[in-house]
Image (tube, rainbow, N blue to C red):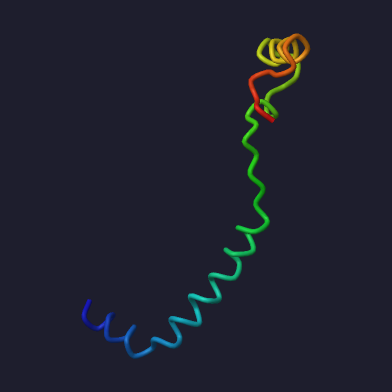
Amino acid sequence: MLKFGEWIAKHRALILVVAVLLLIPSAIGYINTRVNYDILSYLPKDINTMIGQDILKEDFGQGGSLW
C-alpha cells in the first residue's frame, strides 16, 4: 500500500488529468439529465388510479400532482 501511495504522489499531475477527464462526461450527464417528479406520468391511462386522478382533476381542478 505504501508503494501505491508513493506512485500516486509521484504521478500527481497524471492523476489530476485523469480526474478532470472523468469529470467532463459526468458534468455533461448532469446537465442533460431531466428530473421528472410526476410519478403519475409513468402509469398507463387505463388503470383505476389514473381514472380516479382524471375524475379529481375534472371535479376539483387538481388531482394527486401539484403541477
